[in-house]
View 1 (spheres, rainbow, N blue to C red):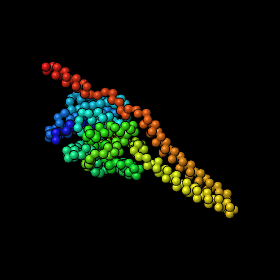
View 2: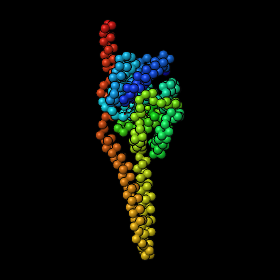
View 3: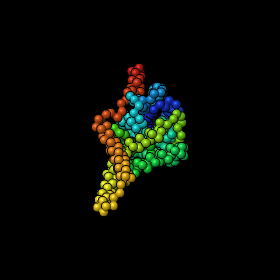
View 4: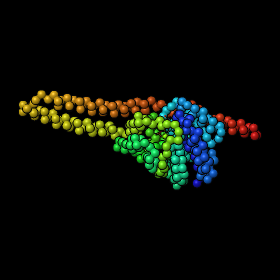
Length: 330
Ligand code: UDP
Ligand code: MG
């Protein structure tokens, strides 16, 4: 098999503190692979600046000037981690054979890439990076993250347990992923839908090397809700089931009330009426909320808005430079 071209895709949002530490590590890893003849020399490290407000994009441009293996694209504004990863993958897919997406903060162990590439060589098209333990997380993050995966499973979303967005995907898989046109992105739930032969490699997740996390509890909750409502309609099925049960109970209750009334055994039932009204009111509001979530999503999907807009990229410059160099050497 011919050597593959690898593009490592790295989303970055306000990462000026950590990029100077991690970028050389990604490049060193890439160079090791090139040196060991595992990937082609034209492999690249692609940074996706997700509309950062600090000096992240300037840093990326500086890297790209220093070494031709570094590339960068800039999103026109902050769109969130998932869209940044997708922008990178969709850009990379036409230039390479395999991509590996990884966080910029050094939390994911880059040495797991060895096993990922080995698995690709063995015929896997998707290789999921799975964290083997959560020792480095705080107790709170560990419990909420585990709850997150359990909740997704319960709600009918097929995700690989403890896998975030550290994964190898071949360009073949990405060409098919491009046909999944949804605007509400939950990549880790979408890759299993694409299919193809896949496997997992295990790694220990470290602490962030610098800077701070962008995923507080509120972001985790919205990611979980988005994950469920973009990929599964189980909540609506639950509501329908709940509605059926409540209706049956209501029917029984009505007959019971009628029988009691005929017997003349009715009393002023203030408490029971209040209970029933508030119970039903709560269920109805909750159900409307869940259904509204889907209506809202459908609304957003029908707009077919672009999922990312790339406002700048580094390699036009470098290509121009290459052409200039060629001209000079002629
Ligand atoms: N990120 C991004 N856009 C955002 C938020 C985060 O591209 O709006 C990137 C961030 O730079 C990092 C990755 O997504 O490379 C994961 O983010 P973070 O480390 O904050 O999340 P955590 O590891 O704490 O879950
Ligand atoms: Mg992180």
